[in-house]
Length: 625
Figure 1 (cartoon, rainbow, N blue to C red):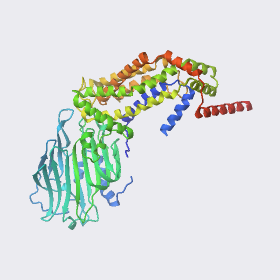
Figure 2: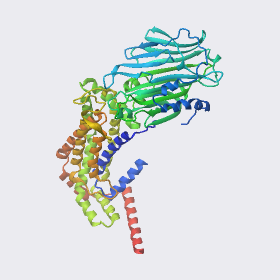
Figure 3: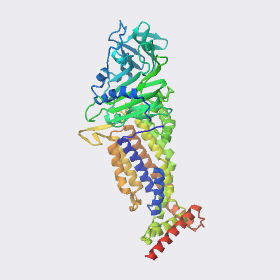
């Protein structure tokens, strides 16, 4: 299952969505005590790893883990383990680089440690126009640590491998061999296919059991510092995290906050996700257990930082008859939902589409639909607008139902006010009379609440969709240079907390649209605030301000959606108000309902009996006093 950790900005985004929805819910009702009880009950209902490392693993790995504290000295510290345990027979080994590449990626693999020292994506650039490097300048270390028969530690990063590059029918095969003798060696094998971000990566040994302590498992250590690739460091870092699949669960992740650590068993793969790009290590035979550590390297977002987070994975490997035989894969490429899904390894979970029904909506509706729209429209901005129009039209019956409920409550308001004035000193009597009025007229205050709540899954799904849509990256629309980043129209000479050092236009337009929408639907319909009820007037003014501030650094595609969505909603409500709903007809229907004999339901009878009993008990207590 998913165990998502939310940062403060994401929580604020969710609160904004829920706040807008709650505003809609409460605005459709008359703010009477009986409604308070119903909504209170509804709200209460809604609200209503085991570490498996053995002692030796923890002992061996506690020191390297602690060294992550010093960001600039981590990589050097990895190589400061004891050397000289073996006398390797790599007579021809030297400090050199071997390059393998296809149409999508270029990898440089060093003889020193037999590891990838540079991973370049050929089809993608940073926000500055520079090539995307997931690995470069020693930001990654891949090490396997052994213990020899005397108890000394051996690290593959300390020794030179001999390369052998061959061409295959569908790509290239690179063997990196660390020789102990002519018939004793450790081998890393990289196999790259054409037009593929995924590599086969195998680790084999021959004769290793003669020199190692097979009672102690070899330890895999994969370390990487993620480069900054996006314009907004705070926005990119929010979606930079470790993602992994373990123990039959779909996925879990860590990475939010300054330090995060997870230990899980039966880990199938680990991904170091850098928002729109990711490095993944997959294994055909799950790691028995793995410790994953993430550290935030951004100390000051105003500084042009080089790295976002550091990641580390520590996992024991297994000997098979005293030898290593591990079949794994390496992926260096985009965090694109469609690309990751094509590998049939559940890598699509690296892209955060949302949990439960929200993820289902994104994966089965919004992602396929947006792919179709962007396939024939000349602009991704137009695809967002058209998708927004379709979504609002589909939800228009829900909007109509809510507005109709509001209109009925508006017609009943004079009678409700009369009841409130008549029984202003008797809350129980007010409730009884108000409920009797609702029953008599056939009006239900909850009929406007439920349709509004039905829109929450759509709002939340889209809130997850836009920040993860790889297709929007570096796609321009109007003044927005990149729909996956903020649409700055002006730079500020100073930084405003939470807001930033720039002015984005789409959040401003979305905030104005939200304000006019709230004003139009509230206005003269707003009831005086009752005790225990939220102040709708405050929400009406706060929600646009929250949108303006916290969406200033969000993807402009998301702000564009909210702007168009609220414009369309305003238009639909004007049509409903002026051409569909007639207050006179509603009043006539309510008056006709009053004359019809009403058969009380079981629930209504029970509620009435409870109110009468409560009123009788109150009367007896007053008599005793």
